Length: 313
Length: 258
Figure 1 (spheres, chains in turn red, purple):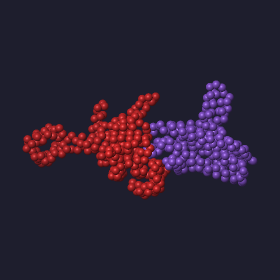
Figure 2: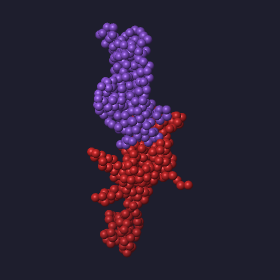
Figure 3: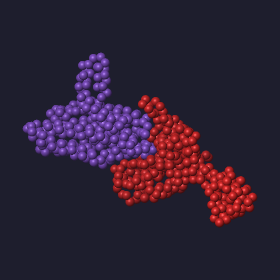
Figure 4: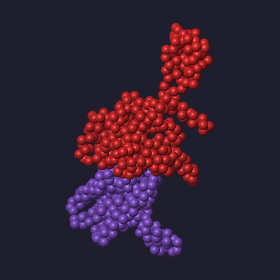
């Protein structure tokens, strides 16, 4: 039996009319094709204004697509019934500040069709889980930014959804808040939930995601497993050997040479690596290690964005 | 009523009830009603007439102000603060959202009218020392005022489904004022000729008729209100507000909520 994809984005695109007569269409999202498997934690990366929030607004039915469609858990994304299985945390959320945390969660759970008995049981547990067990009847207007983000994630999962969409869940949080949010996402992942989250903080995506997609100026620029993407930026290798005399023979092929007594450490590009190793053998240097220098997701991100910038120019 | 609609209705009501502005308005209205006997002292013998006029007009005007000022923010506030995103990501249909908002505000206005009616009857008791049989017929005028709220709320919601709060407030209030002179517009239509007649007749049918809902001076003079008028006004208010809400839903169903 084939596994149903948790999310299939089938060419979703969005343009907004601009100008005095509103006849010119300005595209904010080019046709986007994307599949997220069940149980996957998927990072949707891009700089501010890349089209991440627009994609999420389209998926949540807040705005309508100019073309294309999407399927969530095998159903049309506008099907109200499938939305019982969807949780969403908007970017920099604001909630009804005249409500207390239990009232807010009760309201949202009711809208998602959770029975009164389940609500009574689940809400105190959930508040405890997000670290808001002691807020009592305090109205949300008295909550700090971090507390609001925690109640935000609580409302997104109060109905125990199968797939959770988080728009910049770490934005505006202090380091402690970010760590707590990471732990919460990790918990969801451990429970087998599908998590789709947009971010421009790459270390978060690197730490949590199975796969990521990079979007820039409304266009998908790359997609893949985090390790694969990182290895694409791996164009350099560190070579360490014994024998300072050999350095002269390879000095034009390596960078950043560093000598500690007879031990030399230098960096060679992947294409020059064979030549460097051959010359070292010829010089009878004793090879100690050859280590590929792993790039970060940030390297991939920056390379990709700047490459596409150059192409456009 | 389905549970989502009930939840939105109750939350809208709860929001209004927890808003301090509402209490300021209610206190102000009750003070006005309570001070009505003082006006009566200026004109001996007309005390009750003035009290009824001022009291019922206060209930109507303050209700309309609350309907418009809360009504204009019902949709726009949820868009501005992005709370609507968390609503629409759930199995909530857009029509349920609009209808729930409408019913929630109506619930607020009815509860508010009940409080002001109690205040009004207390003022009446203080001024006249006794209730007469005619005083019960004042309730018909208050019922008509509530019907007015049905229409004003629906109109405000209609404007706020596609425009800014200020625009919605100005237009809803303008329609309320025009609607109170609906009889004049109908008379003008009857006397006009040609294109003017068609336009005036069209406008008279399209614009809300608040004149028929205003029986304040009639009940103040202890004149009876016919059962037929009660029936027609009830049907008119229900149909008009249902139509305005339906148009608001149609607009909102297609709207991109940027």
